[in-house]
Structures are given as structure tokens and as C-alpha cells.
Image (cartoon, rainbow, N blue to C red; front, side):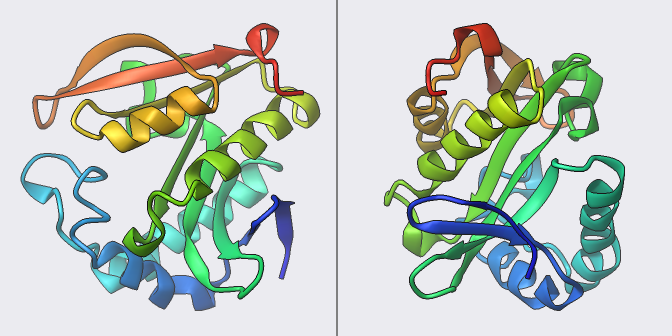
Length: 190
């Protein structure tokens, strides 16, 4: 197990091929994917073969192409139970890419099991990723986005110190979203 980061209650480790089933289970919960997929795809599971043959290889490419950035499996420290994942990656590699993000912006995000929502895990790990980015990885700007309807994720962005920047519309679904960001000069957590 290659550990990337530890927080008070979490371990963020690199994914392995054996994690495909865990990712499939996570994405099979329509409540989990309600705000992560747009338009008529909202709440639909990601097919297992897509996870195994597309998403896992994409994660591995991040580890090679962007050392210190990518996607990590989130485990509860006390039980080693899989809770979901976090990412910290170049914003231009996001599916929002150049339509929302600019060169030099790094996106923080997550997908977590519903049973652990509201326990502060998203805030805890996102704060630690932002701190690591600013203090250890040379990141100058962190960003995040969410559907306007996803008030829980917006609260997490605010709790970790990101500031509202703008509203936008996802072109493929015409749903309204928000972008938040923080420059390293504004960071007070380190």
C-alpha cells in the first residue's frame, strides 16, 4: 500500500487494480452520483468495465505523469474501510478543462459513500490536500466546482477556505454550477 497522505482519521493511498470493485460499488449508489454526473446521467452507475478499463488506467497515468497529484483511495484509519476517493489534479485535466479552469490551477474534489456524509471527512482530507499543495507541492492556486444544487459540497469548499469566484453553466446539461478558488498568498492554514 503506497500512502500519499494521512490525516487525523483518514489514509489516502494510491489505487490498485484490485480497487475496481470498490469503485463500482461506490458509483452504484444513485445518491453518490446524483451530483457527479450531469443531466440525464445523474444518479446512474458507472459500468464496471468502464471503471476497470478506463478509470483505473487513467488514475495510474496521473501517478506517472503528475507525481504528487492524482486520485487516492480514502480509507478510515481505524478500520481501513474504503470510504471513497479524493483527487487533487491539474484543473486543465478536469472534464471542465479550459471551459472553467486556467493554467496553473489545481482542482480538489472527492466522491464518498453516503453512509459517511456529514462526518467531516470531506473537509478534513480536502484541507490536508490543499495544505500539502501549497506547502509541499508548489501549487499557487487551488480551485473546485460543484453544481449549485450541491449545497453540501459548496459548504465544504467554504470550510476549507476556498472563496466564491463565479457562477457558470455546464454546457452539456445546462445546469448551473459554481467555481471557488484560493491563491497561495491567501492561504492561512500553513
